[in-house]
Image 1 (cartoon, rainbow, N blue to C red):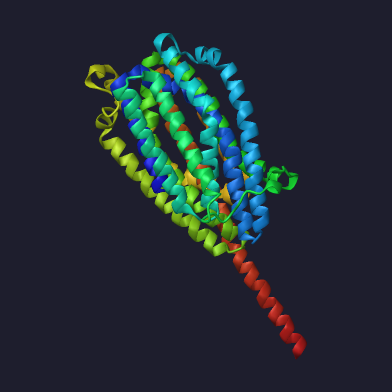
Image 2: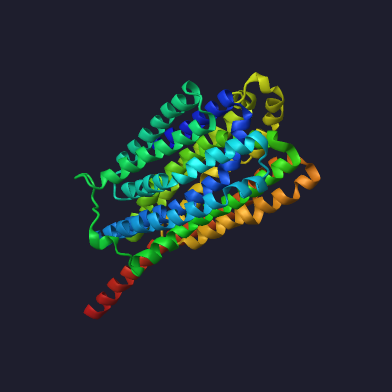
Length: 444
């Protein structure tokens, strides 16, 4: 969780560099790049989280060799899928940026930044994807240190390229690319040290159906989450450009970066709990599953509530981190946008942990449904409908309404799931008691 928090802070600092040094056009340019970055991350999480969950489950069942097979297959899948995806993105980059509403200097900055980050994204997918496996094999401190290392290097590189060398969008893109390269070298190098429980072997690099299908099946939930986020981000950018212009896109870029630090901490907490939940679920330790999940829910809710309070009480001060007084009109418009968009932030904690829970126990179907429900069932339709009635305020309101509706559905589903786990140990105990009764009757 500490590592993810540091990464969240890093993204905040990067946003500050962009907003205060390069201006709101740079923030808007990065926001236009979001759909491309998200779909790139999607293919990394498809394999990274899917393989980490499978490694955790197999280690829980004491199947060490099969866990190494999962890691080896994950490497080949990552290299193959991400390479194909990167090539396709670069081919259609310019027309898709224009379609989303990027124009003039903002388009030039968005194209430059996106080209560099997408072309080098294989490093990010290897680094963050296999960092999940490091955590799954029982080395969370190593995983945390790797994220902290790349986060600190990202801050230093942003200062070097953006502030000192003044390379603008090129510098921002290079700082991301080099930071991800450092992470990939750090993470992949760990598996060749004595500290690693798992090793790469030539025979584990051969793709096997018994391993590939579970990886893709489990990873389909986070992939769907990112893919639907890509669709939602594309629709959002188009609607913002149409109803509020590129200033509205810049404001949303700030809002997203403000919320990011809270979501990153919660995501780190849920990912930290995921291997514990998966291990105990594989070992059929239902009480420990409930305890781990409950602890994650409490921690995530405290974090999301604290973030909500700070944003609601000090919205202008938060926006001022990214925008100078020269852009007074953006600050004036950004304060109500920030409050409306993040009105339901306090509920985001248990939503993120709940989706992660179903991934951890190898039941991604629920995670997929919840993800599609919020992004495509609630948020995207609201983004398409509400602006026609409330103009740009409709874009801001869509987030709060979608989060509230999703929170209710997830709460009902989790209550049912926890009830199922509560009954399950009791049925096992009853079964044992019936066996003892039958033995006693036979003896007498």
